Length: 78
Image 1: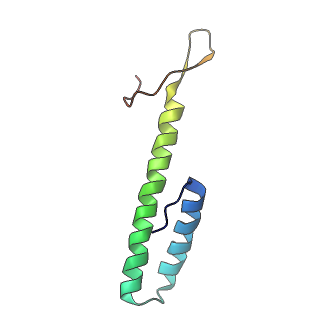
Image 2: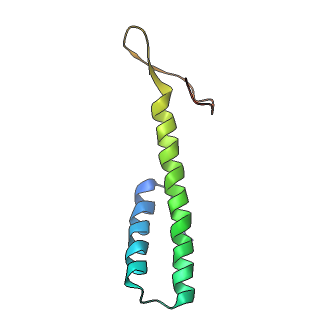
Image 3: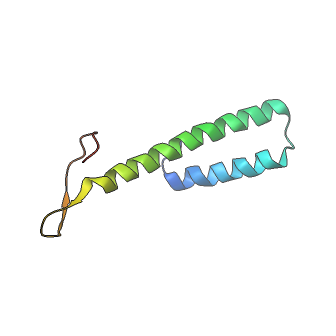
């Protein structure tokens, strides 16, 4: 599988795969191969979304209402 560097290109390819699978015109072996690529892409996209969510969670409100950027430590902030 080609390595995708960004979320957008991975999603575009994933959408193409869904259309191919929905048509059901490929032989079983090819369908399984493209399905496997789709699963890998879905995992890649989910990782990117999780990463973005963690970055958003890092921004917290100070008592003055200003935003403060806190380095991400890997643990969820309370």
